[in-house]
Image (cartoon, rainbow, N blue to C red; front, side, top):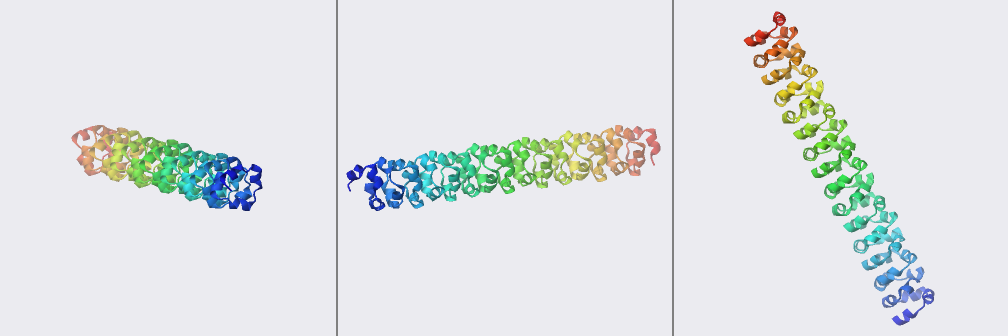
Length: 434
């Protein structure tokens, strides 16, 4: 039959064609069919067409004319044989009616170069979930951006893991990222997290999503990504996530606002290495409740620079007596400033160990308030070196000594007193001397 003869057939005659007649049509004859004729081809007749007849015979106009029933009747082999132009010609209504097996049968070339963004939008959640990992990884960034959040949420974790870092960074919108399930977030590879998620996407994470990050994911974040975590999200993170951060992430990632946002549990979960990595600005940003939550091992991990240039006098005054007693002699003598010494509470001063007391510089001894001097234990007074006594204690501090403290002075300390200090001794204290 000529093309003219083909086009002269009525729709009734097209319907009446036997399957053998349909199977015998050449690709030229198939291409000659009008869109009206194509629309009435019975599904049983379509089923006998070879992949060559499908791909080389049907024009894009004919594909567009096929009904929903006809499109959904195509075999997976026929579906996979469609050209990218034919795939693009399928109406969104017809695409949404395709079986999941047909969607899964599409080649990666058909997916990447055939499906339009409107067709991507038209996918059902079941169809989105049926995409193979190869198909998922073949999506263009425009196609990824076109995925509806309901379809994205329906994707399996294996599909999410198949996305490239480019698909994530340049494809997923912040709204899409915020819609991911916690299971999908936790399924992201460390490469996808570190090299895929942008800082804007990190900002877009919900509190639940931030809390769903694995410790491996948390430790893979760049310092820029760490800094982008919202304070509300950081405060909701698990202690294991905080403890998983590297010292570089802590020192160069966490902002002072994020340090403020740490919970007491977070503060207590910091490793000694993380504690030692804090910058002086970060140390200064620690809330007193968080500082008090520090374990003694964390306190001992602080460098003298962190103590001297980081801790404020109010922070020092908030430290527990156990934390004070845990300070190393190096931290005491080279970390605590005279202002820090002056800020110590009476209980803190009394908590100093004899080793700490004897390590104080003469300037630090002189900075002890008279109230605190009077509260020192006799063994602390007796532990002072003759240099500390002679060149550290002020005459006001000598006046503040209790009779018990005066009586605790060693003979070496007594003989080291300056004439001004001796003159400052109250008569009751003088009487108490051994």
